Length: 593
Image (cartoon, rainbow, N blue to C red):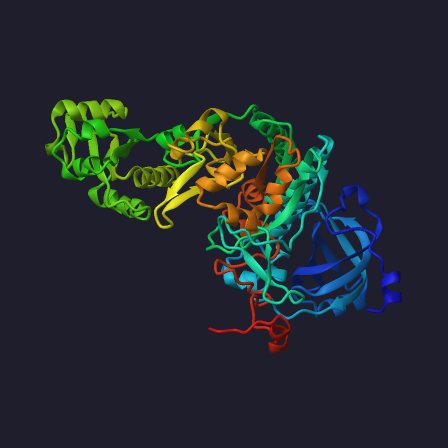
């Protein structure tokens, strides 16, 4: 179609806005053919754009030319129509469509473009393999559900920007080409043509730059920013992802948390019409692990973990006693009403805990006459009674136990708890339960690297009262760190930072980063901290993960326009791909595989 013709055929309305009040109006619409139905004399077409669907009617009595041309229309043809809005005949209205009371009687039809038969129907109900959807993502994105997801993404980003701007924050961009400082996931490296043999790194987060902005005097910064991590993927990870990045000066953890609560309150009100209850509850890391096994607990239901190590140590059940002798723990959960499960059904649960390193799953059924299990013979009746009372056991309940190192036990039972809750329908849909997890350990010991590593990152400040422990008992030092959890999913993490250079150097030293290495990797930050750095802290929220929860999607790929697969490939463009040898030569690179 020529430019002149497009000027003559300028859209008057979109496909989703016409209503009963528009009856009699002359309109010009453009869009895609969703479906075509030939009823002998009349031809009906559902015309679609991102705003909605409207029914258009080709009547040979009204326009023989348009009717004749309509015979050639097929799914996904792009067309323009001129016509008159008319009320649908009584009894033919479609209440499922916003435009369901009207139709367009076509006077003139232009076919703007034809289409090959799509590899799958452009309908939400169509079951399509994900690899096919990603290969033809531009077609997948025509489907209503994905379009609604991306529209929601836009709206949520606007709410975030508006709210933070209203609170005095400035949106400031930070570099994508920066220095590799490998602490955490692998960096994506970018070779420098102008500096042969040297590489940039794509940022895993703007962490260092936002701290520099605080030192520069910009006391309230935010950014909705792309980050990059070269790590193994799963449903909630992508090699490139988006986060809401926030940093503030002259604040403590409560200030950061209050600000983020206000932002999330605005997002949920504007996007879902849901009023959040504030302040969000808080739970220490130790309590989260003790009761829920995970540092991102889902507190929408009970079934808390209960430790029975002391009672188990008095039994003659070797699985338990060996774990206790090896400085392990024994913990259990009570599946209320689960006593009717068969042994086969219980054994299937063993596969759930094995994924997290547990060797097995012991069980006891609580009955009116006592307890039933292959392991009850190893316990005295008074010990079984104590275990049952501690776990709130009642007739018909199933008590499930794991014995191992504390980390294995907590992770195995924490995930088993979630598995059983979903299986039993214990989680009320449409509820949003936020939680702050606080007082994380500053450090943990990495057995493979044989050194201490930061639980969050090496710029996190220790609690003032724990600083004296860092040399002699580093694992007891708590961090000024906090995670925000929604429905058992961590959607963000942050901390108050080290603003004193002496403490930052001490943290590096404890992490095994010597003075020379610290200077080489982080010298610019250490220098900056020496020039009057203010107390500061912040947080980063996973925007994609938050959106997935808002949309009710199971994977963040459903809220990202052009996502990668779990192997970090783009099925649409074929990335990553080989490059021309001349490009490698210019970069002074040689492939050796």
